[in-house]
Image (tube, rainbow, N blue to C red; front, side):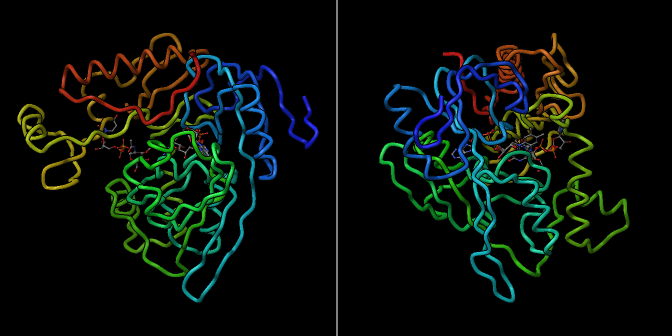
Length: 347
Ligand code: FAD
Ligand code: EPU
């Protein structure tokens, strides 16, 4: 269906190639957003057909557990603009549909410091604030300035600064009170032209120790992050996955101390004096799930936090496996894991 203003809405579109888990599901309606002027028309369509609505980036943090009875919009709002440049800093405004890793490569190539540790995270720039993407000691919040987003109910553009976004660990206001209420159209970040690289994260530190490098350059950090990630995370081009399926749980210190009595090797990261974060991958691994496979749904053999689709698993197969893991971790450790992945479809 081609609407008068150029919005091309397709019917019954297969989503398997549009999410990195690669499970089959049909979207009733589907369109591509490559021009912000199409937004009012998209919202009119949603309202007039009383459809559900979902904005999709690279599909690397979504799991479809059934067909989607509504309109999916694939974000292709592109463009990178230097808003301001001084001797020490650069302010970049990036279209929400730009590929995140390509942006990291571009910035490292220009020797702009700040996001090199976030190399190889799949997906789009517009999805990065949703869960405040993070890896190897850096989070989006560390470079974030503001974002622009279209208010679906009021049909207006709004600007959100860092405080408005209420960023947390794998969290923001867009996963909570404003869930599915805004379409992020651009993100502005501030990078440094000279700076200190961050290689405090243990996997990076030991990588450089092995290489005998004591003061890595920005290029070496980028390369190291890519290598470390490739050594443990499956490449979605070959094995369907969503990266970490669960968040790392934060638990009271007294609970951690009890677990430590029983499992002296349990790792932890301090959060506050009363709270610690425990790696969910360690818990799932210790519970015996690493390398588990039932049909085509499984737990990755090198990283127990990653659920995988070996080919023909359905969204339900993956979801049910995640339920089994969740229940087992509660039973063995008294910890309720929370899914990081966003679940859609099926109702
Ligand atoms: P999608 O999966 O398309 O969408 C995710 C959610 O954001 C959905 O709810 C969607 O509706 C919403 N959304 C997307 N775009 C917009 C927009 N423009 N406006 C409003 N809402 C929007 N994450 C990390 O934090 N750290 C990692 O180290 C990491 N490693 C990963 C490794 C692998 C192999 C994989 C597969 C995933 C990994 N992830 C990681 C998760 C994922 O890459 C990030 O969450 C990424 O930001 C998702 O981007 P996306 O464009 O694919 O979002
Ligand atoms: N571990 C195990 N067994 C496993 C997996 C991990 O014992 O099967 C242990 C490791 O030995 C280590 C600890 O758990 O002591 C942490 O493991 P790792 O460094 O691999 O990190 P993670 O906590 O599993 C988190 C993020 C990743 C991010 C990496 C690097 C979450 C939920 N996940 O993983 O993010 O890339 O740290 O910073 O916070 C994502 O969000 O999708 C993601 C991949």
